[in-house]
Length: 288
Length: 288
Image 1 (cartoon, each protein chain N blue to C red):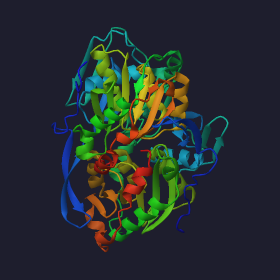
Image 2: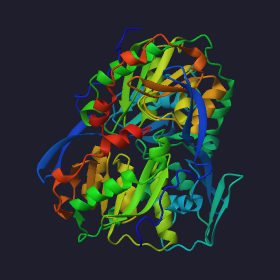
Image 3: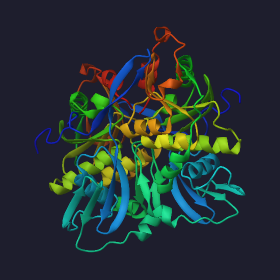
Image 4: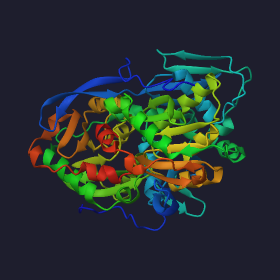
């Protein structure tokens, strides 16, 4: 895959809009803010959920959500994904009918930005997944990825109040998706990987958001063995990463990071003191 | 109410735990990280949802969740709130049985950190609520609240990766709750207000998190006319604030803020240039 295959398009129509107000001096201001729109997902005739999203890549979001919720298996046949922008509806069609009555009874709200409903059997599948033990993570990749991702034009830098997720390989960002919730951004990448038959082999996942239980669960669902974030950890996120043998790197800002699981995959090939601290600049621009 | 009636207790047992790993130099590190635990909420015999929470104030969280989801009305009789720590279950009991079958069919996942499931009739109630037009917001209060809240010892400053919500009056923080998702923090405050018969009159709501649609909806549910955040906006959050006549202030950091709805409540009584920029210090400590 080539670097920057998918990157944010911060100026795309409809992803942000300008609203007016006053600032701290009482002066009129016009401010671009990120858009969130409801998107209702159906699997065949079954309404599954209504998600709030910036609205790009609804088809990838729909399929990725179903895959990461274990409602759809990667080898399932999908006969169509139909998106109706006016209705705000996306329908994923499969030959065989599915029934979520039981699953919908057992829904778990997950923490923080890790939006969404995780169903009972997600954790069952979690235990069956073995992540690639031979995957490596050079510390120079962590620094290069952070710098490239932070400097790439994005809705985050333009309007803030948004999360990003990036599928990477070595020090190359491949697919960079943003959304109001990072759960949507990761689901859009899962959908993109499925649609383009991209496997987890050699892949690294980067997120701007916190390393909560749900982010670890979804990354394991996607069988990606390495998860990096510039944000912090939750204890259960760390527990799950240890259980699954994932390499979990957080608070990756400037020269600093901490690895709280799977440090055996790390190769310290970079001198941290040669890394300029870019983080504050981007923090300041962010609306988070 | 007195200032600092409820404040974070960052050293309380069980809210954070120390995990070990390696840092960017390959040195062993021990890092405190925030805990997230599942808490399953029942309304009488009906299982409603399982929430991920730091686990303090489960009774307030339970009642506040039901109030903010419109499953419970503020004048409903509650005969008991029973919390079983070992089971991770909290049961809210009412004399009359309730049935959520229809509501559970229509669930909306809301954006970003604004975690959780908003049911169809929440928006109906939203339109019926009139916020106090006479409420005022002095800009000196915005600066004083931001400074007091940023400097108060908290899990945010200790371990990061957590959100805070604060019920305020003028420039006094009254009830400061934190949780892995700010939706939990606001629900805990709603539960506290209900349990202690605290009305919305004269109150101001502060959150560390983004001003998404759900934060505005919940603040309107609580009939609080003023919502302040140090984070950014989403377009629908701004739309809803305008619809409801709420005063919405975001990106309140150092001397800066923007007011994108209800600016008529603002009184510019402070000189922004006299305000020291404290924000970077706290951003740097944060794991968000």
